[in-house]
Image 1 (cartoon, rainbow, N blue to C red):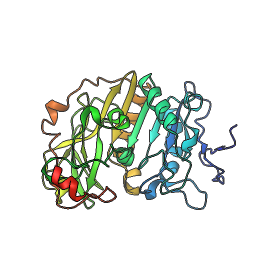
Image 2: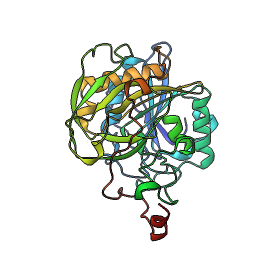
Image 3: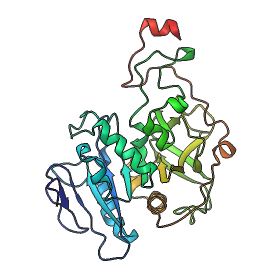
Image 4: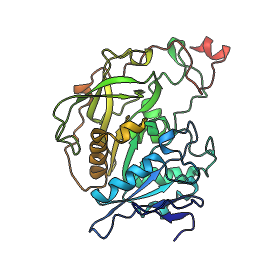
Length: 325
């Protein structure tokens, strides 16, 4: 066993961490699928994935409980230095709850990926591995924001880069812009036939930290739409846009949901069903029709919200940049 990994079995006492993490056991069930749950935070570290005193995080405990029920064996890690073709090959899918540029040590100080590790990870998905992203996975590997600002005197974050977006953003299918205050919002169900949504024929509401997103891929199969009507805050002054989707990236299956900030969301059966439906699809336990529908169900998705103040953590505009805008 790699000394940077430790075994963590559901119901067992938490093991002290070495350098990386542990694995949950799905028992002796056939066709167990292996998923790497990667939670390095080079940017903001969310409380649900933060380990305190070497104990599993809130999200890791939830996955440890639910994984065996779905035949999923999770490996939990925050160590980006492990990313290489040999290490990645053992998993059926990669599950990210991350922030920032993962090739830098950043906020949590855990070992970063190398550029080669990032490339190997993206190539593995393109060649058939699955990917699952929740919440801050879209606040990861932002497209380079050090250049001149774009039109209308907006900061670089408020721009759709299309084919020039970071390769990770193109794989995921969108990128985080900003969020407003936590509030209740309606999720409109587009595809009730997708795994995890078959029990949900009606729209639902949750209180959550809702992400305003941009740079949507043309081939998104939208599952849930963020209904912005009635929401408060500048980030939501826009038409409805995708909040949960599935897409193909080469041969790989990619699933993302913007939900997952709050602990009470992680314990909510609705979120759990949607999440594991996405996981089951990504690891090919279940199939679904993921024909692109973004332009049909969210025709104004590429329109961006207004901006009255800079994005936190984003490079400030210089006077020269403002003149170019």
